[in-house]
Structures are given as C-alpha cells and as structure tokens.
Length: 121
Length: 288
Image (cartoon, rainbow over all chains, first blue to last red; front, side):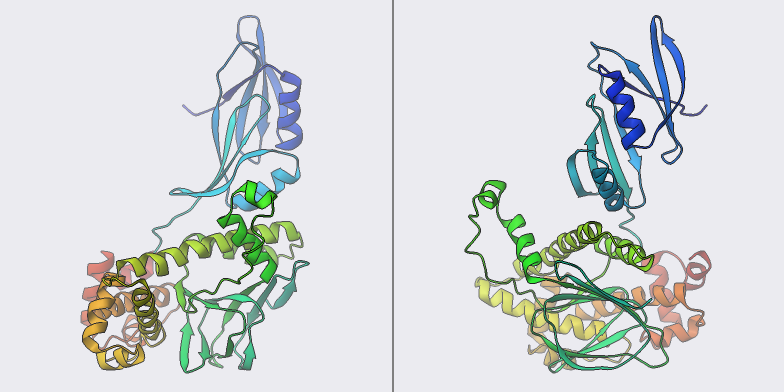
C-alpha cells in the first residue's frame, strides 16, 4: 500500500486549478471519476512529490489540512509570497520547527514546515 | 568564502576565511559575531573572549574591540551588523500593536536597545537561519527582501535567546532588589564567558571569582541559582560538548582530544562522556 492522492474540494474549480498550477507549480495529469456523476482532476507536483485530486463540489464543507515539508521555510515562504500566495500565518517557531500557513481559494489549509532537530548534540 | 555585503537599508554582512589580526576598531551598529569553524579571539577592554562554533558574541554600537586568530588555523567567521533604523523598526514591531504602529504612537521610543555584551549559545533556530542565509549568500543570492527576512528572523531568534539567557536567569536569582539581580547576573556572565574562553585551561575557583568580581562563596551560590549547575559542572559539560566537535570534525586521536578540551585523565574523560551521552567517544566518532 502507499499513499496516492490527497482530495481537495472546491466550488470554484477553474480558480482552484489555476492557483495550483500557476502559483504552486502543479501540472494536470489526468481526470478520474471517483463518485457517480462527478469528475475529479488529478494534479501532480514533482517538486512536492504529491498528487491532489481536485473535485468540484458546491455544497461540500470538507477542508483539507496538508503539510508540505521544506528544507528552508523562509525561502519557500518568500518565493510563494512573491508569486502571489497569501499567507494566513507568517513563519513562526513550533516545537517541530519553523512553519508558515496559507490557504488555497477553497479554504484548504497548507502548512509549510521546516522540521528542525533541537536535540542535536 | 570572503565577502562584505551592504544592503540598501545599511544592514551589513561580512564573511571571512583565514586567520588574521585586526587592530582596535569600533562597532558602528549592533553586531552579531559567529565563528563557523576554528576559533576567534576578541579583546574588549580587559576581557579576552574566545568564540567557537557553539557560541556567538554580541557587540553593541560603539564598542571598541580587536580580534585575532591562530595563524595555523582555518577560521571561518560570519558577522551581521544591524542598521539602527532596522533594529528600531523591529523593536517597535515587537513592542507595539498594529494600531499603535499605524498611528505612529511609537514615536517616543527612540532609545537604542543595549544588550548584555557577552557570549551566547549558538544552537537551535538561530543556527539554522544563519546557516541558510550564509549558504544563499555563498551561492550569490542577491534578493535583498529575502536576505532581510533572514535578518529579521535572526533578530527574533536573538531576542528569544536573550530572554532565556538574561531575563529568565535574572528572575532565578534569589535577591529582592531587581537592580542587584541584574548586576549579579552581569558578573556571573563574566564568569561564564571566562569558562567559555578558557575551558581547556586549569581554572581555579579563586581565578573565576576574581574575574567575576565576586567572592568564591557568592559565586558558588549565585552561579548555581542562575545556571542550575556549579561552575565545575558547567565546565565539565562545556568540555564534553567541545570534545564532540573535535571528535566529529577532526581526526585527532581520542587521547589527544582529552588534553585539548582540558581533561587530564583519558579514563575519567571516557567515563564522563559515556555517562553523559550514553556512547563511548570512539563509537560517537564512528557514528558521526
């Protein structure tokens, strides 16, 4: 078994795909039908090594929480902000490391996390 | 890699490789001094401080100092000088809320912050951020907004360290008067930096107390209150920590490392090392 897709739901399908492809660097790799009468679009990011399954759903209140690992949170935060991504939480220090958070147009939350080892000898 | 980069807002970053003596000079701004390999000596008035990769030094604006390194050592130093206005803006952001900042309600806080000019531990977030910044600059990164983001976070990290190393330790001292507590901690920091700089020498309690301008009894009692360890325990931990660096980064035989960090007897070093780190020095070197 392996983790394959992370589902995200949106009422603004076009805006959502545009956000993922133009600001986060995803590319559309195909379409799949998981639920009767509703088509989902598969988008993939080689850089993030993840595939998202974007589904149009006007009534859904499901929101995803996705944690993206980075080796340099400040650099990625700066690059994404420069690309026009709005961060709801600036980089802040957690027990796990340095993290910043942004929302996609549908309100799914992405955490950019640079894990840090604070017990290093 | 050697460079000196002055940003448009007058923050300045200097990276230097190789040993050299620099005569008396004054700091023009608050300066954070790091040594990423080897060690660098700073003479500030009558104080002689040695900075190693596990510590960094703060110099306030206007401090006179000179530096020196051993000629045979490969020393990599890195310094960040914060422009006064950048520092003031940072301080205002921390002190005032958004409304006050928008209404310019912070206009009266023009006094420049003075920090306790001593040695601080270089570990955790500040180390990660400084290493990221240096790596980008070494690779020729020119984006000043990103550089300033790192500098902003380096200040955040430094304020946290200052809070832990100064403010919280002042509160631990068992004196009623706040002024007395601050003064005692200032003197204890003289003792601490003496240990940091002379850890591989034979240090007597009398020498240490004299350096800190405290009596031996006073030093023993207050040092333990502030740092949670006796000066002897503090010194042993420091020697063990520095032995880790030598074991990891050099090929000196363990027996030589023992003497280099100030231990006299290899067997007691190995016993203390194993008790502290749950591994023998040789196995640590093999796994590092």
